[in-house]
Length: 313
Image (cartoon, rainbow, N blue to C red; front, side):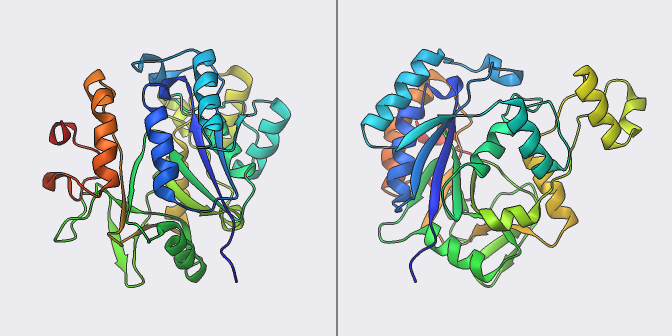
């Protein structure tokens, strides 16, 4: 039997322009997998939340130009604009949350509807998602995606899986803020979800739905005690109130069920997440990518999920 089909989808927005022309070719190159399709999902919505203050925000024209360059260079197959059609929104929200919601982004400006769009629209048994700023190492001849699929087929309680979080430490230590346990089949089990990198079996995720709707705390405290259905109704009527993060909703569902998020223990592949957006970091990024692709990293970075800038330049 051949491998299950897997699509790679990466969300892009105007905030990603400073780094995406480096990171997206790098992610596709390092993944080294026969994807059924490689697609950029373009968020055309106005920026909100903390996205408004990000450095290096470009125009939609610049984003379209960058996306076109990546297609013409053969890095990705195509792009598609996220759908903000109200009928589409209501339909997929009913499936994913059991209720229609009007809000398309969370309080930080992260595209919740766009995330669901990238789970609903791909062509493939599996969907691999990377945030466009992620960095990935994979040893030649090894495929974390193949191992991830194999582990998930054996363990249907795994809602998602991803590579090791940060380069491997000699003692195996991972600096995590949340508890986890190790399974002897080669993965760590978490009840906390992270949305920056994940491989999902699409049919398995459908079985995992619906997710709980979580509204952020209101300034008027008495509103917090209202049932979720009432908060949702009021938000749809008035527009007041903000959705929490999609990954928090997924995490709560993990807590409520027998499902886990998996992280492979295999040191042959790992990711880093850069929080730095400074001009100094952007200038150093090509060299950082070169080092990561060679499996080279500062010793003090081992076990850390977030890239520690001062160690790299």
